[in-house]
Image (cartoon, rainbow, N blue to C red):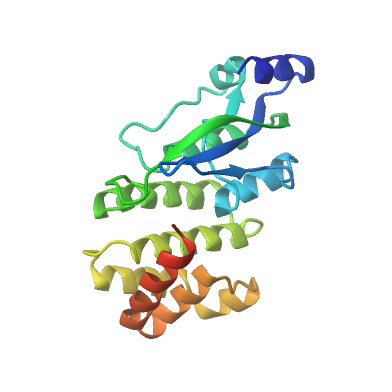
Length: 219
């Protein structure tokens, strides 16, 4: 992180962001680049709210003075999505973000292992719900309606991965948060969005399609 530190000093940045690599057990790796992302604060915040940009803190260097100034800390008891929540707590304050187009961090991924990422549980979903509610409390609609709706889609998509999630609770979330007109208003028709729309019509068909698509595209 020495280069990130020097970059932070030379630019007086509050956050320095770099690329990172996913490393897999079979020896392959995948570059996660931020090269085409906006680092204008409001747009970067929007991308974190919606999940378009990974909220991980492992590829970011934060100025200690800034963290202390705004009394920012990790949320006790939250260990699923905790980095994104910490990052959003920083981004709600006036700060300077700088990007360094180098991949310094190596993130080891092991598919099939019993991790929060690979196998979300009902307990980990409750933590995701806590973070989503934090977003709703801190960001109004408008101007962040589209980003909050994307966050709801991501949350619903996570539910499809939890085998024992109560069906009635899922239907309540769909009814209250994911109304059809917003899919049209925000023009959201990604595979995730289409699976969530399908689940509003027939949840069992959506689960079947989800299993097929997840094996092909999300692993």
